[in-house]
Length: 287
Image 1 (cartoon, one colour):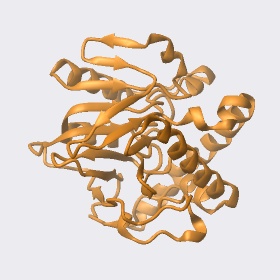
Image 2: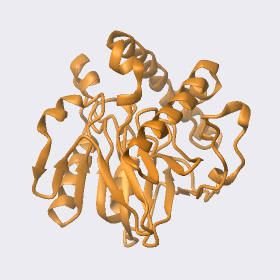
Image 3: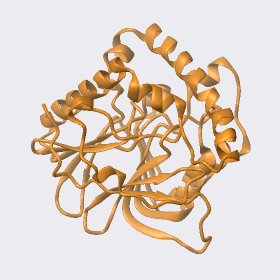
Image 4: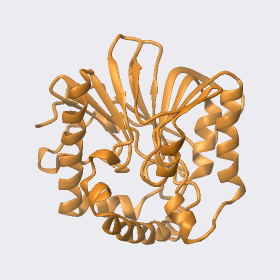
């Protein structure tokens, strides 16, 4: 299944600092793969996003907290706690929060149900303002490694955490030379042939799974590869992560879904998601 180019594909890259009085109101927002409890989590960037955007519904699409990593050693700075408190505060003020557990916080799958304005559920169907129905899932359900070879998934996570640990030093040097944020782990993922192939297969599997729900769109996270693509009649959305891409998806009042990026060292506004897809690298989101 080859993606076509007729999906709405606009990406806004926000400066890290913002006007404290600037609040943008949207119908819905989606975040995933924050991985609080790890050194690679860009909690500060996420806090900027949560402060800037007010939404009717906030979807947390899995892996907000990295329980895998917390089992190896405790790392929980104040900013990670601030993220949790900010989400809870939004719920108290009327935002509907839908929490969909992923594989790194799978223990929360035992707590499905409603808790005030917060609902924990396996998946969700979101109705966009333009009438389209969207399936929202984390995506690990379609990852054969996570489901069937858990030891390999843990081993892969260790290697991934090592690459992430190099990012701060690399970006310290880049900042010294006036360069923007760059992720070694994201670069490696895009350049390694097997990773590119995996992303392409994953996207197709997600779309095929979504068709069983008779929806017009599917939104997931899990693979840390932000994208907006059209697969036949189904639009595929991946909201990325807050480790590498620092990205989220937002729904405007007219039902248009946009990608928003918060890179720590960037102030450029780009339309990177509008560029044509390299068909030889199907599955790469341009990150």
